[in-house]
Image (cartoon, rainbow, N blue to C red):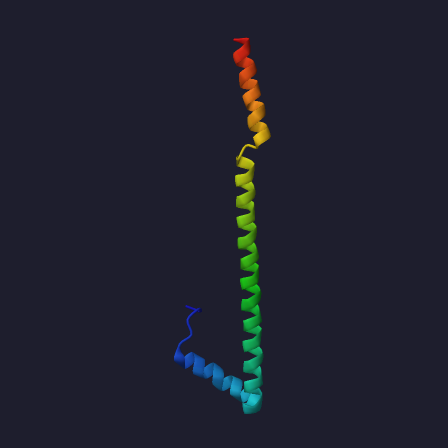
Length: 87
């Protein structure tokens, strides 16, 4: 209901802005709003990129932790061999 602005509503908003700010200030205000939106989009995309990189890094760390190291494998083999010798 409130999220959709139609053509008549947009024309009314622009007419009110024209009356309040005048024809000389509207282009300046439009540029300021445009540059603000551009900076906001740039910042949000940078934050999203950082989040994605952190998620990839965490996944790689989990994979590295899941892989048994060569030392752990050799220690496990030694334990198995020791048990076989006892039996």
